[in-house]
Length: 310
Image 1 (tube, rainbow, N blue to C red):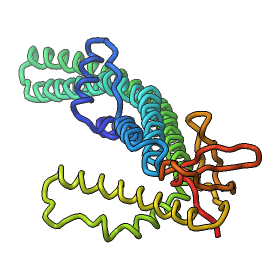
Image 2: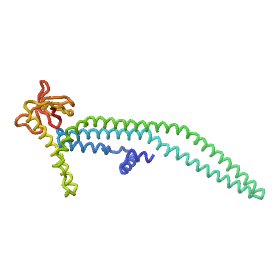
Image 3: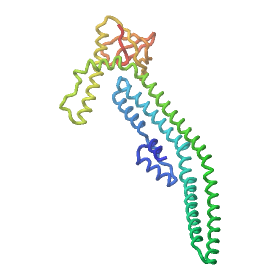
Image 4: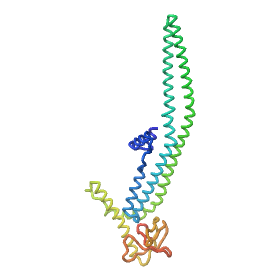
């Protein structure tokens, strides 16, 4: 039971807090679990980088998935507590204590009976033997009565085992549901991020020489600054390369959409993954954007969401 609690709630301070609130018959305050906290930090960081950037959008998608995993984890804890831990705890703190107490009492009655029989064997006078025989009869009667009580309690163990077996099955099903949900969430996330490496990581390799961190960087703050600079260089490299290709070509270019994009306003064009659109540059446009056309629809599209076609 204790190790199940550790599995469901690894934080000992959180377990102690839940125990105190349970003893006070009060509901413990709801707090974000570790996946939910990680997800929120990822979403916040993604919004800072910008949802329109590849890295920012990827962080947001990962954060949303972590929050869904956190919700599934919360549901696992709740289901397991109701269907498995609570019945087990009720047995250990109730019936099990009763059985243990009655068995101990039976052992004491047996010792009393053995002591009475020993005194009867040692009794030599008639009066002493009569008193000892009466004592043995009383001790035997009390022992037989306690043995019957203990026997009835132990016979109920088989039905208790059947109940615990059902609870164990419920616990296994809850875990199976949880891991299946997590697998599906990560599978969906992998599909969403699957097309990222084709362009984004390629630009990362092209910019690796200019983004390599200095060996003199030793502090955590300096390392964080180096990572941020690298990400900025990657994004600029992608924008410069793509825009240069479009400008160097005569007329419009075809581009394949790498992943979905929802337009933020009427000047932008919403995109669907794997569709092919026409793109071109316009004087004065931001280097991170191109004009995109799909039939009669037209609007700005982020370069990092596109793969230019020959």
